[in-house]
Image 1: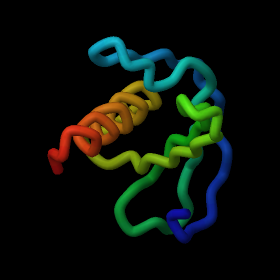
Image 2 (image 1 turned 90 degrees about the vertical axis):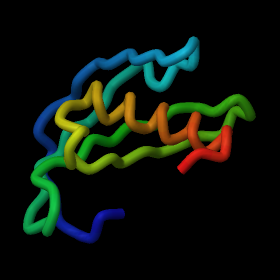
Image 3 (image 1 turned 180 degrees about the vertical axis):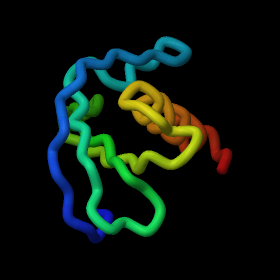
Length: 87
């Protein structure tokens, strides 16, 4: 997805909520990125949406994202902004 090689570092259990929306309740995989121009790490996980479809996420460690928890929170905020028409 981010056009570089990676090495798996660890799995971190995260549960984040924002305004009663559960963003993730499960394992976030942490990857060290090799020769990425902007980020040293990437956080990835999957979840099931309300229609039962699998959704996959890969968030780069670019401020303000600095941990598995903030990566999940950023994805929740992005989803809420998309649903309300905000950029």
